[in-house]
Length: 481
Image 1: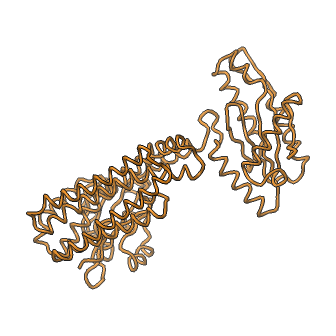
Image 2: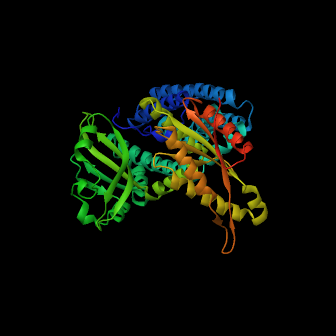
Image 3: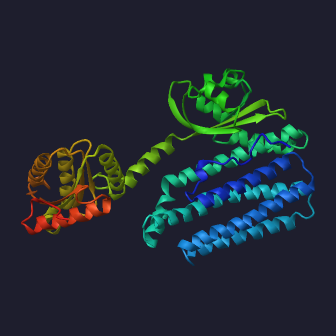
């Protein structure tokens, strides 16, 4: 039996973050790969039916286990009901494929079912399960149901959607090519028609693909490979791959091929014109029955735009769109870092809750656009006073939180806050002829004196801020907790 290839290699992109679900998904993928290997080796009908029964039985078990998890957090929620209905549809589809293929040879029927399984499982994991898992993980993090659903919808859009589509397309193409190569090794005659299909995919896919021998000498490449590298066919065939893909480490790849059958990672290569390009490499090692390497299949996907979109998405997700300051999500991460550093170095840091004085009249008198100008100006003034290792985040309309790290003396904190109050109180131009002024009331909670976690420090700093308001505003007060 051909056991040197996996038709459906497991990838970290399939992980939902819920270990039980991910482990069962990997078992399903393993059974699919086992079924594919028996199919490629032309195993007898009894073996094929046995493996197929194991696969469907385990799928039924997995569905029950998975539905129990969703029900635990989303009891009778429409998304849970739709998800369960999708499981029922899958079982019905498998039964229909079996029924419709009753007059076909077993191998042909199993091949139809295998193709359906791969496409269904890809869509189900990347779309439905990933979506449900994000809701559950958000609920576990303390989100309300409505907020969890909204966050999951947001996370499943934009960059993640592009990643899902890229992963699906890459696996669809890779699965077809790999299955074609597996069957060709067993019997070239039986695979003639499927090789024509594989060749069409090979020639027309947007992914850049080439095939090398055991020494990484190129023996075949598709048009996309020539286009992305900038070299003509006669310049490439018979040459070493690393001459054209300079981001590859031959020593590392040779070491890997001794232990694994697939490898994937991001690389940076340079085309004929010298331009750098970011690519995602998926590499399959094809070995013969003796375990010796025969061929390597290299699939390169251009991910430059995906990387740029991911960076933009991460910035949008972690920063306030108006001021560009960190938002509450990024503040939470900064809090963790500040606490960890303070614990490790036996230091303390200050949490300051800052609320503007006199901001609402500006909105009411001059418009919200003027208010936005004031908020942006205040944000820049705060940043100009703070040090590089400090953090300022916008957490509400005119509310800011400051993390002042590595404070050695109380005098240094007072000096910084005095400068901050002076800086904020300076006039701000809202148009060519008008200026406005705001103040700031600040509450201070010190770690670990006034709290040892984000929740208690913010709460105590917030209370201290109201004390500053009551004392006449434009000043700072320490927590008394």
